[in-house]
Image 1 (tube, rainbow, N blue to C red):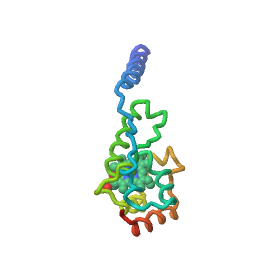
Image 2: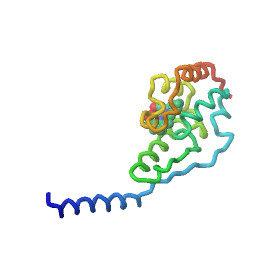
Image 3: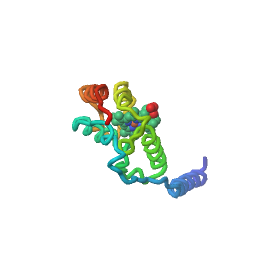
Image 4: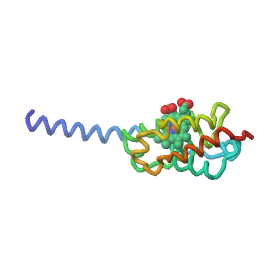
Length: 145
Ligand code: HEC
């Protein structure tokens, strides 16, 4: 490739990197209605609440802490998709009939949650075996209000 073509390509790539920034996904945190939360419907001990807040809240609540790279495409698209899908499946702030504490135990026990990519960037969200045990014994005895 000639130097000229190389420069042309680099310019095109730079232009593309700038242009994709215009496609901005919504990064919304809808208001939390206390009566819709999981805690309003399932008795949630403090220990369980703290684990879910630490490891699950960013994708499974209306209180996502959007990091700076969530402003930068294409990361922004991936993050918004994860949060939208995550909230649909299990939402600590909008708990619906189809959601169950048992799924929380199941997903963490087999290691599919939190998502691997999230753990790479948020090592503090990694759950200890003891914490998974806490979630699982809670889910078995969970009292639905
Ligand atoms: C980085 C975002 C992210 C984090 C953090 C995260 N999840 Fe998820 N979760 C998702 C996405 C996306 C889905 C839907 C796609 C899927 O099932 O893989 C999902 C699905 C689920 C489901 C539904 C599974 C099903 O198929 O019915 C449960 C239950 C769940 N997550 C629990 C948790 C728990 C518990 C934590 C914390 C320990 C957690 N998640 C952390 C993104 C996340």
